Length: 149
Image (cartoon, rainbow, N blue to C red; front, side):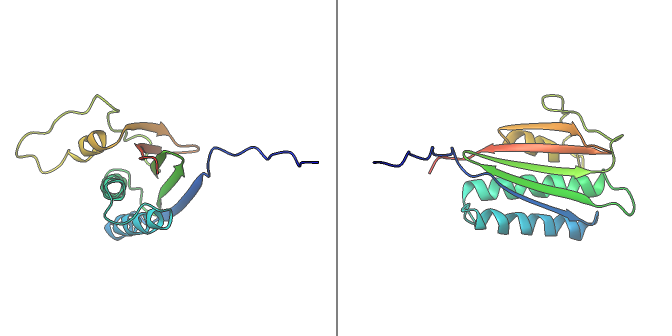
């Protein structure tokens, strides 16, 4: 008599979420903790996926601190790793200040001091979007397709 086979699940989904102060130090800490978590999940420091994720987290966290800051309110970083995909989400409580979405970003002038962060996210991410955050605010989500092992 044989025992029935247990169906194999397609893979494990891992999630990391943390709130940070809406300060430059909070944005820097978000990037460092994201890299640490990705390394723990098997995306080694210095790998293409890790470096790309670090740039995206840095840009989204900087935007949350600069454009999404509400005094006394934090921003949140959420990482979700599922088989073949890494999702990066940064949420803030400033819902009325929404940037243009994918495909609608304006290219800043050659001497402009800002305005390139989401262009960088758009070029690095395989997909990205701006979503409403319940109960208040917005979430910018970027996804990276990860190479199969």
